[in-house]
View 1 (cartoon, helix red, strand yellow):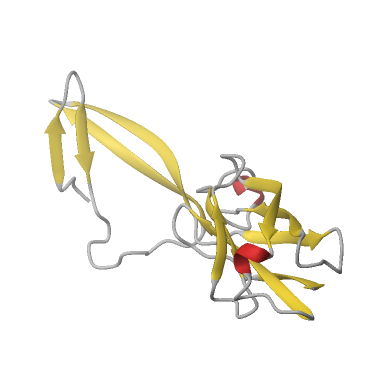
View 2 (cartoon, one colour):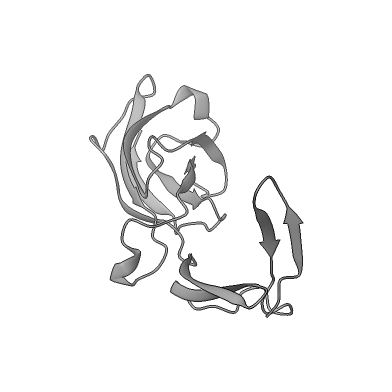
Length: 168
């Protein structure tokens, strides 16, 4: 497939191709090799590379709170461990788009109580976050409660929610 566009930059060219032009996601998850042949006059050079197709949302491997009972004047502390994967192949280990944001949602799993950036830029985010009960008074009630943890990667793929149960 020929390049659809090439632009001359300082000492190099930037070339783009959309393949196939009608399907936005034709590749399976994982490592996809490709080859580019550069031709000038009668000389040609082949370059073999690969792209990693990331079609897996982050996974919340754990979300816990140190206590199961809180009073109204306390902050809820949530420990979380999140991993972003690009594919299930071993060759994709430590390759991912990265975690964009971590959200903490109220009992209804739709009201966002807090959104934070990940504490690291890699494929794993592990940390501790506190949420004030008084600041989220409308979402949390006396008795049984849940805070849901959700992660979004840099390709806007969203994890399944992981709930943390506690009482006020």
